[in-house]
Amino acid sequence: MKTQQQWNELKQRCAIESRAFINGEYASAATGQTIAVVNPASDETIAHIARCDQQDVNAAVQFAREAFQRGEWSQSAPSVRKAVLNKFADLIDANNDQLALLETLDTGKPIAHSASTDIPGAANALRWYAEAVDKVYGEVAPTEQDVHAFITHQPIGVVAAVVPWNFPLWIACWKLGPALAAGNSVILKPSEKSSLSAIFLGQLAIQAGLPNGVFQVITGYGHEAGDALARHMDVDCIAFTGSTRIAGQLMVSAGETNLKRVFAEAGGKNANIVFADCGDLDRAAAETAAGCFYNQGEVCVAATRLLVDNQIKDAFVEKVIAAAKRFTPKDPLDPSSAMGALIDQDHKAKVLNYVKQGVAEGARLRCGGDVGGQGAFVEPVILDNVDNRMTVAQEEIFGPVLCVIGFDSEQQAIEIANDSKYGLGAALWSDNINRVHRVAKQLQAGSVWVNNYNEGDMTVPFGGFKMSGNGRDKSLHALEKFTETKTTWIRLHR
Image (tube, rainbow, N blue to C red):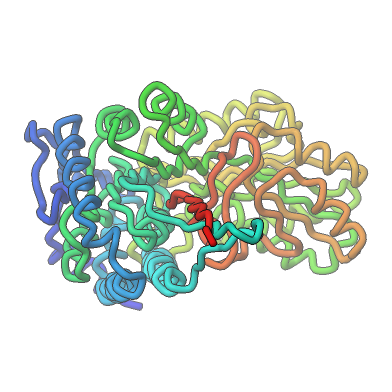
């Protein structure tokens, strides 16, 4: 890991590409308009990205469709796609420092996380699907004797991947890996708040050997470029991660146009339940703090609702307060920093307003709040004595705010955990094997962790119940989402 001085030196030398990537070339928006890119840790403007709109989207979709129809990628052998995607992943690894720096400058997240987790995770996602694509078989149906019916999967066509600003490259590659491996043409639409690493991918795609039009990057605002993609009649699928509100808008857009598939991973208000029979409360407290405050709390599956047995609540909260000190905000380019800045000043103000609202509704502020000064920094906030009906317990804050809720029985804990419109993740801590299975079965969440929080890898699916969405990232389940399932029925004649 580089020193803080070395990262700052690299920052001074860094030449930032800020144009969209269309049909194998970098290009300004058709209108020539741009959007300022602000480093949230310093409030300085570091670039101006292309503000694409309908014209740019139309061009990108046309190139994507033409590439798909040519078949150079869509009809290529799985072994060919495997080799190219493996090279793509290798190039991401080779450019780790540059990509990590762009990610940290863009989002305010700690450079140690960008360099050691986010960028390697992005490369690993591509590599996992590269290795999987030539190991997925079709099926033969058990029909009558004189029929041969077989089921195959073929690429869906033009995919628009719309991704958020909290893990820009990593989540992008969760979509790119299966979509490209399946043979689709993909248009990546990053958040206007975090487009730099996505733009950088363009040059790596060319080096890896992806044909022109197969991978493109359209930058700009969601209500302009994003909406144009969602309503385009020649886009076959939207793969989305972001807010529940935008997920709903995308589904409306799809319904009003060509019924394109919309796979959405949306918000969360995740319950982390600690029972009195948990055998390692110190570890539970450490993972509770990390589960809520990692990445500045800007995580859809963050452990933002802490449900604690009232028998141990006071003592356990003290342990969590102590563990939260590890996440004191620092300069993101300091390799020792475990917490950086929130994405921008507007979001900081929104998070702090939630804290004020929680206190006004009766919660007790135990620690944290506004750091003040330059940058969008907020110290980890712990709100105690929260009632699950409070706004802070029901709405996704998407910041470093932990809501502590006491309970007196197992059934009450389950009822509180499920009393949410979301169902993305949940966890429970207990050494009672019967309780573990009883509770895990009843929690309404796409992922349930036992005696850990948010562990996993590419082999397991990720997604939610209820208003947390309808898609799944990671694993072979994601690969299915980017293909059409075709039955071919042959009547055999004697």
